[in-house]
Amino acid sequence: MIFVPRKTVLPLSFTSFRGIYEAEPPTMSKRLSIAEFKERATAKFGGKFGYDRVGFIHSKEPVEIYCPDHGYFTQLPHLHLRSKYGCPKCGGTGKKTTADFVKEAKAIHGDRYGYDKTHYVNSKTAVTVTCQEHGDFHIAPCKHTSGRKQGCPECARLERNESSRMSKGEFIRKAIVIHGDRYSYDKVEYTGYQNPVTITCSKHGDFQKSPSNHLSKTNPQGCPKCKVRASRKTTEQFVAEARVIHADRYDYSLVKYRGNKLPVEIFCPTHGAFEQEAKSHLHGHGCPDCAGVAPRTTEDFITEAREVWGDKYYYAKVDYVSNNEKVIITCRDHGDFMQRPHSHLIGYEGCSKCHGRGKTDMATFIEEATEKHDGKFDYSEVAFDSIDSEITIICPIHGRFRQKAKNHLRSGCPDCGGSRRLTTEEFIEKARGVHGDLYDYSRTRYLRANDNVEIHCPYHGPFHQRASHHLGRSGCPICRQSRGEFRVEQVLKRLGVGFEQQKRFPDCRNVNELPFDFFVGDRGVIEFHGEQHFWPVDFGKGESDPAPVSKRDQIKERYCREKGIPMLIVRFDEIDDVEAIVKRFVAKLRA
Image 1: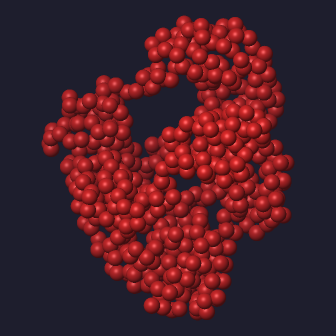
Image 2: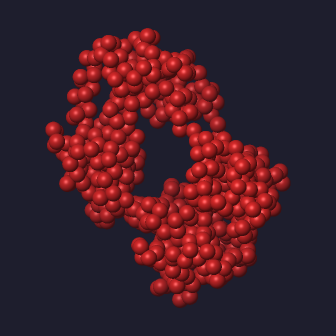
Image 3: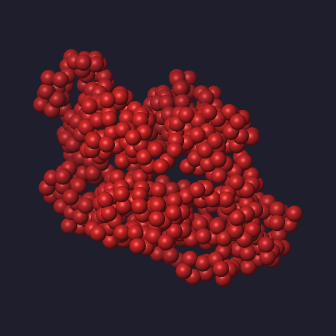
């Protein structure tokens, strides 16, 4: 599929021809003036921030704002006006440093580990941590400070060995030390540290839990229903939190709190009662009339949707109520489907059948699984509700095992070796089987399939990538982008089309003139967008910031619209379809 990045809102003249648009001067909806933005921002934050570098206001382009504590930062105008703190660092959302990570880790693990060799890059890139008993080990920061709060693997191995020799009586004694008399263990049949046992909660009855989770030193788990009830906020708690944020501005006597994502009724002394998502209110949002933002109507939603999707969908059956109440949208190819307005307007979710995300029934699942595994497994005991269901599968070698349906379409019986953890040497051997001798793995340390590993590209230096992605044929992101441009070039040559690479127009510039990948037939332009155009990509020095790339993309796209230059954007994940995509674009240019 040809893709115009959905971070860019296209004018209504955007056609349905998969990513190609004939540009016209866009019609702009009413927007804030600089003076209005400064006035509202100053009123919201009490004059804390400086706006001397704000030279324009556009909802899709960031502005520079000065924080007296942290200096200049960039932020989208509408996000600044909705933000609770204004400055990301003031709100604690700035990029985490090594010191931040170490402080967080020590709060969880105490003085058990040393962090002198730790260098924090991001949450998934492994760091070096020192165990006082077993020395250095490597672990992803997110595994060390969240989830199960994992630590030294050798300590964990010894603990498992000790636990494997535990008797039923020892398990119950340890459980009572941790949980007191909250649970009854009369129904426990202890067969192993990882095998679930039946525990009885005095309030909610029986539940299943593995001894390892029930006795965990960092996160001992108990009755799941008690956990849900304990974590559910009361109306009084919501009101107390809301008053901390909004002081006495609103009357909360009408509030009935039922959940973070459900609306509550709030009374504004100026404009009366209004409904708002509870979470949004605690994030600093208030009365929409006070903020000068009228509630969205059905017509507003349809207009915004067409700016994102062009004329791909029909909206005749839409009855807009709120951002989270589903509406009926009609796909030209597959008919009606239901979707939340918020999901539809962010541009990543449209018709699920167009994207191959339709629901899978049991017959379809068994057919796909049989084809995937060449008829190896017996599915006679499968009870299937959805692709997320955990099902029973029979292996001809190892017997029954439980697995999520969606995971089974990627892997098989764990005892056959499908889920055994690779060593670093085995990972490198598999990687060379996929990529040959292209990459250097001398600094690679493999932990788990979903953790990042460091790989060295001979052309572009070190980069970090999820291990499973690398074995799935992903490689250096810069090389991938270059390969995409190379493929576009080869297709244009085969079609006999004249083109100029890295074409620059004197009046299309950020600071300097911006290059286009291909200027085709003196009429249209083609851009190939690598991964770094859409999200942060780690090239070995931490994750790159996509904001500057995004800004340059927006300038070029706006230039083409204003000048009437047809433009084709090909995404990195469409590299295998380049020939067909480019042929269609060239045919349109020649028409």
